Structures are given as structure tokens and as C-alpha cells.
Image (tube, one colour):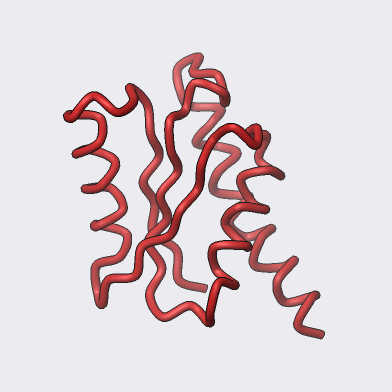
Length: 102
């Protein structure tokens, strides 16, 4: 039962990642330097696993890192801020910041 719930959550996140890649203005998946997903109070490492699998299903290669951020009431905003700061600091040129609370 829990496995089915995880697959369903991955599919929901996947539906949002795929259009973002299509609208990316010709950005190739392997050009993305990082994917940061804000999600509050995920059980253990489960949310990180879900986000990683969703990135794979959306076509991002294993070379694109994925991490999650847990900040009360503003996890998605923190994820976007982290990506913007990393781009400004020159760590990478393209990143994805998102928020997700199933």
C-alpha cells in the first residue's frame, strides 16, 4: 500500500516537472545544475527518494543532483532562493527550484 502511495506522489510531481522541461526554451536536461525541492516535514528520507525518482521519470539524467529543503511555511520559496543564490555564486547556470507538499 505504501509503495502505491509513493508511486502516485512521484507521478504527481512528475506531471509538473515534464512541462517545465518542455517550456525551458531549449534547455537540455543534462544542462541543469541542480534540482531543489522544498517540502515540509517529510517522513525520513522518503521525500528525497520521491523527488529523485520523479526527476528520473521526467528525463533528467543521474548526473543532475536533487535535494530537498525543509523550512516551515516557506520550503518552496527557500528552494527557489537556494537555486538563485547558487546561480549568482557561479556554481551552475541553470537550476530548478520548486515546492511540493502532497
